[in-house]
Image 1 (tube, one colour):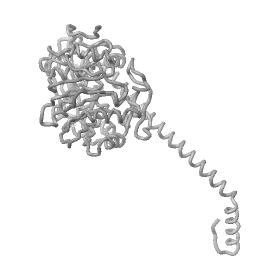
Image 2 (tube, one colour):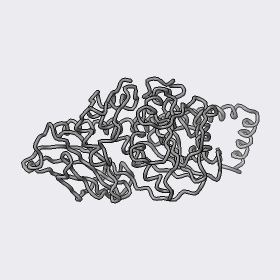
Image 3 (cartoon, helix red, strand yellow):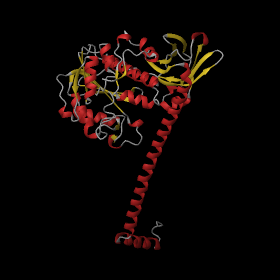
Image 4 (cartoon, one colour):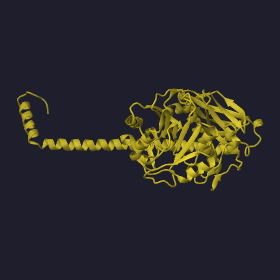
Length: 438
């Protein structure tokens, strides 16, 4: 079994991430199989920068775990059985097992290698999944089922059948959590509630079965109602990695508070006479964040609770509460021993003390990171604008077609005997002064 990352490898950025956020972090199984598509995707996305990709991989797994843990707490009892469906090679599983989120943990995926790796590495029960939902056999029902980044890839033919199959595996008080791509981030208008394209980040799965999917909220709710009209359903927009919507479904009523994870990014890192200055923006969208904090290695060395207006952030998120989001925080030079070997972490914290890491790396790398983030946002805005233009062009084409059809219909009507008789009648009426109509 070849590994892309081992428990023996010492990595300062990964350790800085885990040390202050994971109890008994040194006992966490950090091994990553070299076939793990999630790590490969991160490596490609960060221009083959392995350090950043590894940190992102563990950060995303930890953020997923925190989201699942907060939603699991909506039920008063500790989950007895949990199913992590479409679990891949265990980016989340390692945290679920380490922090004992459930008494019994089962993972399932269609990748045989992923199942063998997780059984051997994490000691979990495994179920090899299938392409057909009706063929999927589970030995029991579950209090908690989590499905990340599967319904973001399913074609219409299997979207609802898989949703139905997993819903039947819930205990009466069970919770099914699954993520989707909402229509708001689709590259083009989503017709008929669901749009599917045959491309994805997977290196091994058939794109016809596992592509890229976007859905509307009404479509998702209709599918859940078709399974059982009595099912409760809660939508949590952008709850997963600030990108995917999360739906929580249960045979029983659902009540619970879900606080948004803050979002934002670093726009500048500058070395000034007073210290290392980080500037950017951060918001919880429906309210201001509590603070932005900078750590050097494990020590908090700078904090700010002062936020200035950013009209562009408020407009982008369509929320006046996001206006006061601009921050500037300075790390004194006396707090930094090395720009190259110490790890800096810049985090935004919500009023519920939920953390979003905005940057993790060396101060030396922060300038390049900020520039890449700005370029990424510009690219995303250009893609959204291009999508809007394509949608308008489509609408104009439809209107042009409808106008042409209407003109053809009118032209045909004018050639009819009825229309010619109508014209003669109106000519008579105008001749005797009964009407001025043309």
